[in-house]
Length: 111
Image (cartoon, rainbow, N blue to C red):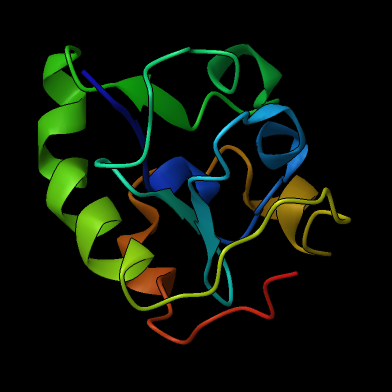
């Protein structure tokens, strides 16, 4: 089992989760995060840290469509291990559904 980041993170990018990850399996895009599914050890400490519930275990049926996206971009983007400020758009976008239209393939800064 692994955990995945969903589209709920897009345009918010809270990073509370990366601070608690013991294996540094989070990767940073310009406006979202992803988890490398092969590096995640299924400890689950990240899930409750997300203030907008953007992280799901892959056993959740809703997580299936996000698994490949997390894999693809975790292999392209830089690792992030330290908490940063959320995006300035976080409050405005936190309840907007279906945020893939805002997704950016561009990498973030990483650590």
